[in-house]
Length: 442
Image (cartoon, rainbow, N blue to C red; front, side, top):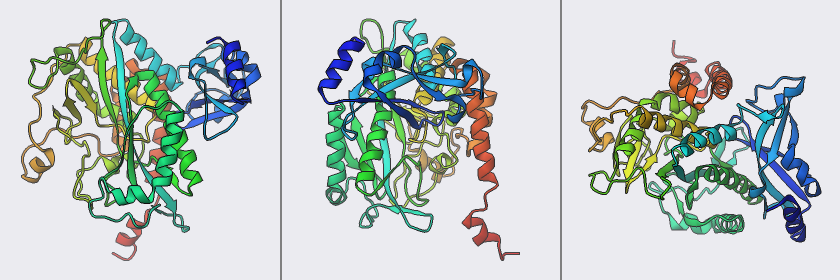
């Protein structure tokens, strides 16, 4: 659609403004409202933002490259049902007239170009898990539904019924935004839900997840709740993941990872892609599980529900949810990411690692054929585990030069710098646990 046609079509729907939206290094949606009638400017030059005011741009406070320009991608324009009169537009980051190498969307596009040179297309299905919370009034947080207290709350229809207004508003908003919804269910923790929708080409899937979060924040606020992507808000309950279902097709539309004659239904390239993920898993942890709290989820601890699917060990297996990579029907489920990640950077890094495995013909270890949590309980030897905290993950990323080079030096340098500061801030904080344990102990 031309700019003129887009302006006419949107104006006829009562649209007067465009929300020019991008994400910062943390994957948080940012943007500004700009007039629809000036759409040509927002497409050609971009909406301007002060670069240093955005996490992770690496831009200075003066000069040509101090301004961040978000260039509207015209194919992404769509009315926002929760903001009447406003159309949403995804933006690519530019500075000084050039694609910004610290823009995570540009990062993903660069990885996809690497894939396209092979004639391949990456498809990603994203499974958003999230909590509905309310503040306690004393600086804490609690489940938004106080009646949601079952020992095993998975698939609890009573909780779905109690929160039907929120869920119905989500259904209506997502449908209006073009989501092909598949299911809505109550997850393993109290006030935890999952909404599934159809997979898409990788860049569109990342864009769609950000739009999903924006809609969820808006709808939850309308219902007096907070939509939370915190990986593990409650110590005795399971955390939230953001699993990526990955498949690749070639120019003829054939599934690159699939071999129906293989016991796991995986092709040679499928196994090599898995090998790349496992080889780079420690560095990938920083980008896919990027917060201090992420490693509370990535722990082999018991939960109140008695069920945990946390992918702690570097392994893969046939439909094995205790592994980091789950092979299922000729595709791969990458179980490391959580919803606090920058989805563009996480997909870009995942693709970079997998392609390294393919291009270097990495050997894949034997598949895991046991429940790793039961295996651990017997005291038997376990696969190597992921980093135990954000600091270890950041160190692993910094040490993984081939992964950093493939993903992007500038972005990774900014990411490590900002996340190291986050870890340092956490390390200097005195927690209630420490006070309880040590204040009068000695």
